[in-house]
Image 1 (cartoon, rainbow, N blue to C red):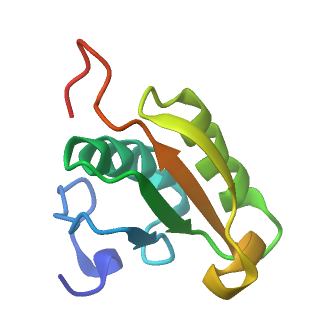
Image 2: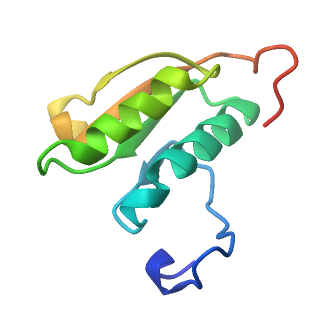
Length: 105
């Protein structure tokens, strides 16, 4: 995939859906939409948990990630990752086993 920041602005970039997503390569203004789409795709693939690595910094990205997770119909709960998985520099989201009725990923 290469560095996401090298891609032309506005062009969709395929993101492999795995159990973790590092948000560092994305522009801050893209974070909410990337999280929303990634969580929907992960839920559709049957993932029960995903880890979103936003970094520690001042907490701005963490707040954006958590706001997106709070809005998502696919998320049951979320919390800081355990220390060995990134601590407060990553958020772990527990997903619904099956996407809600009427919601497509």
